[in-house]
Image 1 (cartoon, rainbow, N blue to C red):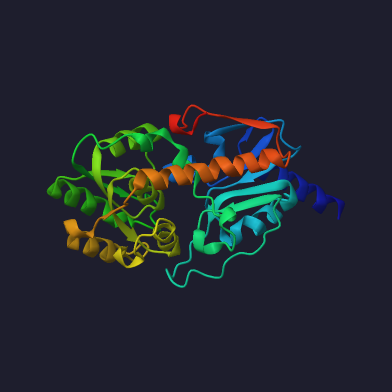
Image 2 (spheres, one colour):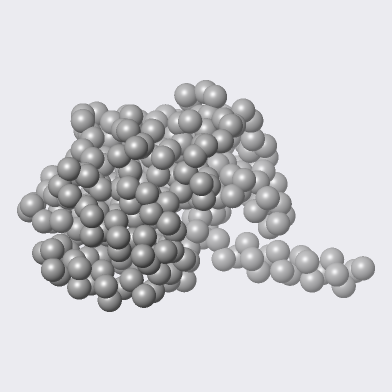
Length: 303
């Protein structure tokens, strides 16, 4: 029994050590080995430096977490009552229904990125990557960016060559979401239109005022459109990981399929304010003493 407990303790410490730590805060977000710029930039650690946090504090999010990460923390022996859930969401294979709103979670404090998933508007806090300054730059050209998820479970590997040829034929730029932050920022700034099966590609494109064709395969895309009051029936449905589905829908796209967010600047400002208000709320609860904003953050967010 003592040996089993020792092994569990070692396993747990080894697993938790993989989570990044800064200024006494441990951050839990996805970091797939293939890379995913959305999973990378959705963590508050890129936008805030938190000072004098509670001992052992964990911040979970953003990104998709089954069951909003409660079971994940239990598996890693992390107490939820010493953790914050920040801008996370869920992704159901069937786009509808969206599920019942969440009334309570066992976290120290929590906020969800999906408006339809919460009973209180204060619990709706969109992905904190909205704070990124790259969203402030207007399109520098009229080019179209085809931005695809690099996960073969989402974009099948046998699509790679086809999409390269198809993008070239249409004069589109092609990029996958395992790119670097600098590469994506340059591609975003060089694009007036984005065609994408990436949640964050859709999110950043809409908030920055681009025309976006959303190729959606789960409830997270419905939630995103619902968050910004865009019609969910304008999403082009594809089957996750199905080559024929993606190719067929890409080949059928017309200029009228794209969505443009009216008053994008005002909605972007609201998304940013919700994140700053949530950070202020955590300070008011003495979860940490104060915070400072990092270099990535838009100047519009600074005092």
